[in-house]
Each structure stands twice: as C-alpha cells, then as structure tokens.
Length: 529
Image (cartoon, rainbow, N blue to C red; front, side):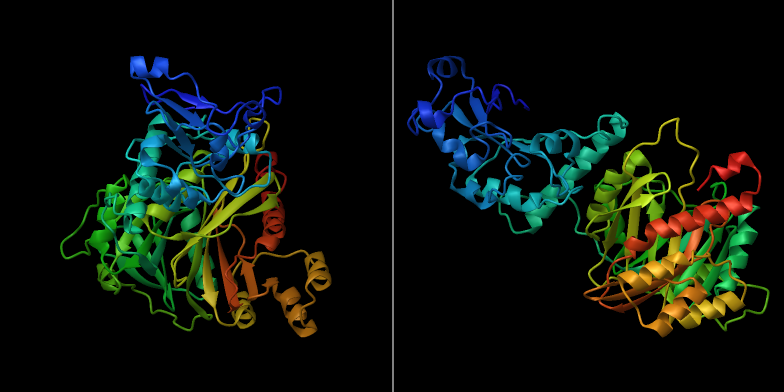
C-alpha cells in the first residue's frame, strides 16, 4: 500500500482466520486507540481491499469507523473500489476531511480472481477500460485535496525501461487531470491545451529500401494506384487513388519496408501539436525547404511519425508531377479505411494512452485471437465520424529465445464500395493477392451461410467475410511485401465497425504459408511467419 508520510495506510486483512468486525464490534466502535496518533501527529488511513476477508468495498468501511477522531481516515484506491461493482458516486457522501490518501490505477475488464487481476493487470490511467475521470470527480466533489498516487502493477511495467515508464506515468496524470477538468469539475484545472481532434487520414508513409521499394511500387500499381509525384527536396514518391494517398520514402532507414509515418487532418494543426507536446510526446525536428508545408510532427511510442495536417490538401504542393503519364483508371479504392500497427511488447499500453490522450481518439473493445506463434491482442482507436481508424496489436507474451524469429507485419487497408469488382480488377492488373485456403469457405458456409452466389465470388477471389448484427465486412489482402508490409482491401456494409477479427488466424496462417513457399529450402527464412 502506498504511503504519504506521515500517513501510514492500514489495509484490510485477507486471511480468513482474522475476525470479522461485524462479530467483534458494534458499528462505529472498532477504532484503534487514538492516543499515539494524537501525540505524534501521525494520521492512519484505512483501506478496504477488494480481496479482503471481511471488508472488501469502501461502502463496508462502516464497521471500522474513523469518525470522532481527526487522526483516523480512509485510503481510497480506484482499483479496489471497482472490481466488486461498487458505485463510486457514494464516495461523495464521505466527509472530505476523512479522505487521507488516494491511489489510482486503470485496468481492462476481466473475469478472474480479483487479487491476481490486481497483481498482473493494473495500468496507468487511460490505458484500461475504467472511467477514472468520473471516479476522480467523485473524490474531488467529496472534498479531497491531497496527492494522487499511482498504484500500478503488471508484468510489462516490472520489466520496462524506468525512464519511459516515468514519462508514461506523468502523461497519464496530466491526461487524467485534464479530462476531469473538462468534465466540469470545479476543483480541477485543465493541465494541457485542448487540441484539435483528427478528422481524417491525409496520408500514410512506408519506408522502403532498394529491395522492397520496387516490390511495393509494383503492388500499388496492381492495386490501381498511380505514381503522381515526387517530393521537391526529399526522396519521397506520392501514390494516389481516390482520396487515398501513400508515400514511399527511401530516406528513412527501416530494413525490409515498414509503415514509418501517418498524416492526420485536423482543423487546427498548431493546437494538436501543442497538446501533443504538453502531453510529453517527442516533437520531431524537420528539415523544410522554401515554400514547403510547415507540418508539425511527433513520435508515437513505436517510433511512427505522426504529422498534423490542415483540413485541406496544401501539403500536396510539396510534390512535383511525376514524369511518366499517370494511369488514372484505378480499381475502385476510395480512401484509407484503417492503418494497423504492430506494437513492441513493452509499449502497447503506452501506445494506448498516446492515441487516446494525445490524439483524442476513442478506444474500441479489445479483441484476442490465435496466431501461428501465440495469442495476439488487438485494439482499435477511432474518431467520432470513423474517418480515422488506427488498430494496434501485440503478442500477449514476450517471446523468449525458444521462439523462432517472427516478423511483425503492419498493413494499410483501403476502402472500396464494391470489393468483388475491385478484387477482380486488381487480380487482372497483377496485384499479388493472398491465396486463402479453400476449407475457409466451407467453414464460412457452415457458420454464417452467405448467399451462394456471393460465397462463390468470395471463394474465387480470396475474399474474407464477417457479419454481425450491424452489418457485414468483406476484405482481402496482398502477400507480405518486402518482409513486413502488406495491404488490405475492405468493404463495410451497414454499420459494421470491426475489422474481421474472426478471420485473423486464417489470414496469418495463409501469410505464413505464402512466406514458406517463397522461402524454398532456406531453413532460416522458413521459420518466419
């Protein structure tokens, strides 16, 4: 239990051998002798632990009452106040002078033993699924004016770099203070500028090298993209189709190809950059030529550069037209639907807070699915209009020396209004589409029973299918290009907001099969997914 000297915290016992206060004391009579605290100036804070043997919610504290003595009070913990369904609104009824200490932790929604949940899954505020802003609002409304302590335990936190962890902790408190103030609490002051929420994706950038560059360029051409421009001062190509803009950058060192940057439309890029800097996001220096767009950029936890663009397309003036005559026939792609980024094991929770607090995107429910080398967790972040969708994924366990070297592919998904027509068009243009095992469609027919004519098209073109109560999702993929990048074509029908998670294990297995076929007899490469 955290301590704020001179306030030791006395936690409720968890041993079943301890006596229940309801059997040994009348309400309000079970208080420690007050003489020592009174003479020394020490205050004692009592905490009801969620796994306590007798008192496991803050509401049951009445059997141990701190009333009547100024040195006896309560320690509240957002985690121990939440797992058993306590309503935090009741905190407002606690006299403010009896709230001695406050501990904060976020967490995912889990159905498991509360003590193990606490020991392994506590997160910094903003990284989990709990509404800590509302919790803190109730505590402040009760009159608490003491410090905020982070009471966090999890398996990643214990292994991560302490310097980055400290920055992440600081960011979480700044974001929590800001969210609480903006919710209307009169006791809190906004900690950072408001910022300007993203309204769309201006571009995505892929870092390429001499080997992956031509490969990815040919794939884009097969997908109906046109090479329309070159940057005036940087080794960057512009590829476009509809509203989708993709940059190929040979000036960024990412062996084998990787998503290196994304640009977000925002009504006030300066305000977005100011908020990001105030929330401790690293501001990236940029070399800018005469008359080039002044785009502010910050680094996401995985190193991806995030640029803040205006709502227009002024930044396109930085590109001169390509020499070759552009083929603008296209294949039906309309825009970027989403960008999927695989996160380093140590930085997934940090990235969750970054996209939520720094960029102002809303986290969606977490999904977990099986991959060829273990379970994968995925979580998407969107703006209210769902014009910006960023999906993060990470392995559930850190891979040890026993695991084969596995690439962490990332991808960009392009939207189309008719995926059957688009898939036929890109197949005819020579796009390297991923082959889907035929038994997937037998299983799909048994599970969801799509229309037979549609099922025949899906099977012919290698298109995946998912459906829920709100709509349907049809999607297909390219093979992995250059080692770690691939592309996806998607069609959303109705109000489907997911990403086809039930199909992810099949897609990953199909990608691994394709990689093995490409590798031939090379045993080192055959270990790759």
